[in-house]
Length: 420
Image (cartoon, rainbow, N blue to C red):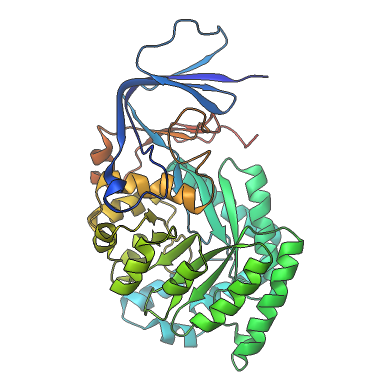
């Protein structure tokens, strides 16, 4: 059965229609179409125009945008969606100035979440993650990337990945799945790093055989995994056909960004401590610099040098890093508003960094990431005067309606449809 939808009376459509990755100052070039309509047929955008078509079928569904603005569905390309429990018990310690290493030594930090995730049932993890997804879509997220990494053993990593796979089947949001077994060194391997690296490499074969992930990620950082260890894991991952993403330069620059460029990783993420030399390397590559300002905000850390990267010609995306330890918020709109206020990015640059560039980083830019003829109708309608107002008026949810694959899935903050 064919589905036809007309969204009429759109105040302004804002979209980047450039060929990604969109780099540097080109990120600010956004097309604006005023007093517009969008015609959707069978999940795809069939028409974009100003003068309403007159030969419409009687059974067409009409949504009156009544002066709302339209942007592509938002793409959050770095999350840690599935985990057990929460870590609010550490919050007061952080505020009081207790260091992360001290919290870790007391049984907190990532090992706290690992224990809770190992002990949680499949259903417990599924229900908790679905609750977060339900909140994320209300803020306009229609596609996201989600990682494992709170198991640090094969059994629990598979449990996380299988939860993500089922959520992708059942929830309107499209989920791209990443295996992050190299998120930290588990307690049981604290005296034998090399053995854990070997185990991860073996586990990659199992993850591939079960077809549970599209990407492999490593936390390449001082005190976690070295660039050499990361390369060893990535070499195996690439040989198995996985695509690569990388946590790098969050605290220190230890060679992760250079490695990401050399191995043609889809993204390199965090980058608060990136060097000028590595910025130059990124600018000459198609690897997306994926910035996570909400993490810096929550941890009271330095922010990534976004303006320097833009001026150098790097392609940026902006993601939430949703996780229980450093970014416990499903509000992706707040992340974008922090990108304006703290990363000093322009609203037009932020739109590019939340739509077409992360679509490229997830290999879906041919079908998603912009409002263009023939692309999937992932469309967000916002109650905002203009694009600048969307970023300027922070801490609130501007979403009025969300269309996913041409289906109205959110209207007035209600989730209406499961994925078809």
